[in-house]
Image 1 (cartoon, rainbow, N blue to C red):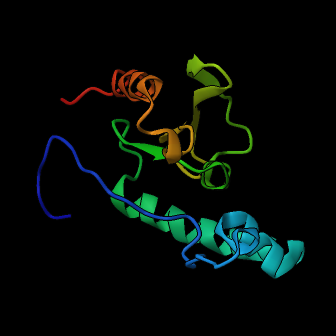
Image 2 (cartoon, helix red, strand yellow):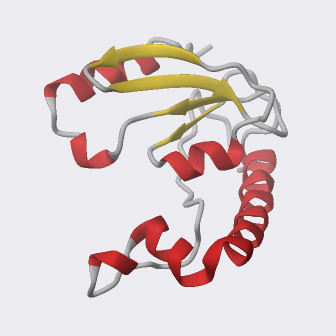
Image 3 (cartoon, one colour):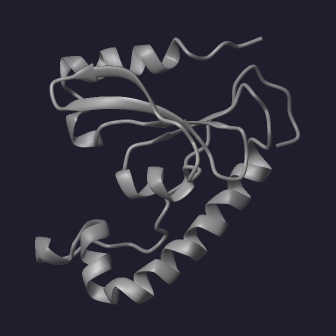
Length: 137
């Protein structure tokens, strides 16, 4: 990160364990939750939260221009501050993009609908609304 740029893009997963499964019952975050059961899964979530927060600290810190875009509900809830107020950025049917703040830093956090809808025309509107909240100095 020893360079100057008007923008920086980073990608990180919240649950670092791969979860493909031959049976959909065991795939994704829900599959991990079933596999490890509630108590162990809460512990895993707390460790993953610490790991992701260290990435946020190193990559964004308290830069007011920074933001996190979460495409998965558990990832959003994992880094969202408990006291952070949510505001709807844009709405379409049953889906909405939500803005809040991260738990450890005053970094903006956006929750987007799942990526499986990314090719829908309304999804582009969502991304444009989120983009409109950024300014590059």
